[in-house]
Length: 93
Length: 251
Image (cartoon, rainbow over all chains, first blue to last red; front, side):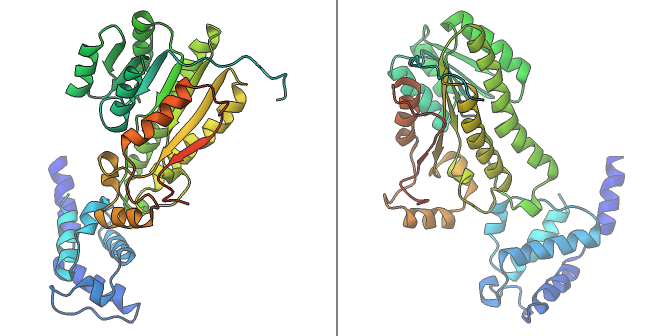
C-alpha cells in the first residue's frame, strides 16, 4: 500500500527542468526573465518569497500533491538552483 | 450581566499550576515563583533535568508531572495529585504552547488543527477544569495567560499561532467579566525571545525587530517573570488586561 503510494507520487513528480519552466512562467507574468545560470541570485532577478509560494502551488497543481514546508528551509534559498533543488527535494518527502 | 460587584479582594495565589514548565519562560516562571515562596505544580510533555532539579530542591513545595496539555484526562489526574500534595490550586499560568514557522499557504491542514488544539483549546479546557474546582471550594484566585505580541501585531509565518494568541487575549477579557471579581484574569504578551520558540523568526527578522526596539534588545524570560509574579501575588486591581512586555518594539 505504502510503496504503491510512493510509486504513484513518483509518477506525478516534476523534473528539475519542468520546474524550471514553471519558474520561468512565474517570472514572465511579471515581465521578468529567468537566467539560464542556476547560480543567478534571486534577489537580482526579483524572485521573492511569494513568487516561491506561487511556484510551489503551480507544482502542486501539476502533481496533485500538497507540498507543505516550514519557513527556515525557505530562508536558505538564495539562487535559482536553490529553488529547483528545494522543490525537487520537497516532492520526495 | 450586571450584578452587584464582589468587593472582597482576591488574595495572592499560594498554589500555582504552570503548564509547559520544563523549559524556557515556563521554567523561569516556576523558578521565580519558588523563590517567592509559592507552592508550584508544573507539568510538561517532557520533564527536563532543570525541572527535576527544582523538584528535588523543594520536595515539599513542588509537584511535577509529565502531561501533554492536550490530554485532558491526564491533566485532570495531575490536578488531583497536586491538590493532595500541595493543597487546592488558586492560581494558573497557561504557558504551554507550540510555535509555528510556516507560511499559511504551505502549512498542512492538520498542523493548523494541532496548533489550535495545543494553544487555544487545551488552555481553555485546563482553565475550565481548575476554575470549576476553585468555584466549588469558594476559592478566589488568579489566572495568567501567557500569550504573545503576535496576538496584536502581524508577523509572517505565524498565522495560526497568532490566531490562538489573539484568541487567548480575547478569552482573558471575557473570563475576567464572567468571573465577576472572584478571580483576576490577565494575559502577559511577551515580544520575541532570542531563544526557544523564537526560532520561529529568522535571524534577519529578529535583527529587524531589535533595530526597531527602543530598549535595543529582544525580551528575556527574566524580564517577564516579575510581571507574571505581580499578577499572581500583588494587590493591583489589574483585571482583564493584556500586558505587553516587548521593550516598546510594537509601539
